[in-house]
Image (cartoon, rainbow, N blue to C red; front, side):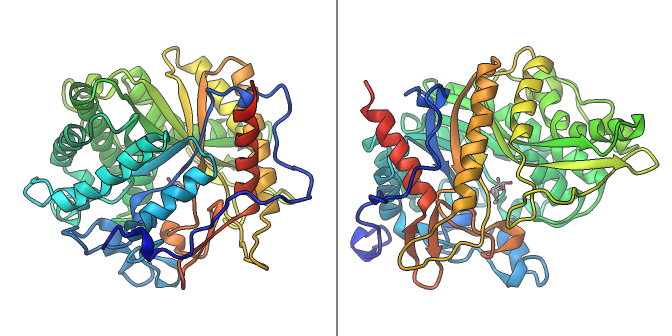
Length: 471
Ligand code: FCB
């Protein structure tokens, strides 16, 4: 019953309408996006879309606990139902395919597939097997993230990412998944955005598990990266044909003035946002400036850890959303100085495509061993409404066009970017902001679960159709 397609009556019959409007999305003729091997897909994450939180043996995750805690999530929203994707996955994959999207980035809910003793949960595993097999049948490239923030609560009860043992439990989980799912996954990403897990989860408490201490953040980060490094050889052993990588969210920091102090502040902003993760992964060391910003927060690192963390990668996933303008805080740090009169999204995030290009070209210079890059998330939230059966998300269309142009510029500057995933396939549970912030290229009416393809998705589909038709 859980996967009965007939239960879904509201899937769109045809994704692409014949609108007379001019096409405000299509990339210029010389754009690298016209290359057929540039993968264009969409992304989601388990807790944000699946729902069915206590079905088929799924255990509680830290996000169930956090969102049930009053005051943590806007409007008291939780992921208990979300997009009901656990039951509607077939129609959702049909929708993805009808848009012509070539790649799908999803995540596996750890608490759905393993019990507290580390034994497999067959029903949970079968859900992902069916889903991945269907993607394969449809010729859609699958990018599977093992950890998109839904840590089993029983592991948090034993210290979560502050406990080194969690890294070893993660390697066990990676082992089970890659044994069970080998052959159905094109690319594995160990972690999604360790910056958010470590800093928002343990540094400022905005995300689950809600702890707030800089020292906790650096230790959690170390264990997250260690988990990643332990998992990479396990994934290679069990599923040699797939690509292995990690997904990092990167942030652009710009200085509010030319003063040396403000320039230093912008540098430190990027150290904590980018180098904190990328230096260990690609250079095998933490950036020392991090500990000038947060004195006395050096994590406990055991012999061999940095080597484990720096395991070679097949790809680096990059998530990019906005820039932060900063000034010196007068001490050893930075403070945000929001710019006036700039374009912003429903999140209040500044629309700043140049930041994506500048970071990508900068990484190419900083990291000689920078692996091939996929933009694993980029997109924006807007207060989209369905009017007469349509959603005209004009700001998103322009946002996507400009960010894809920034990616093209980075490619032309020599960065090996191989693909781009829209965040997100559909509106979903946006963490601490609940359901108010709509990031999807497909609209979800949460009272009926009706999906409505937004104008942005129609235009992406139109472009993909044209690209495919080219000789
Ligand atoms: C990223 C998350 C993703 C989504 C977007 C808007 O930080 O990876 O789940 O919430 O932000």
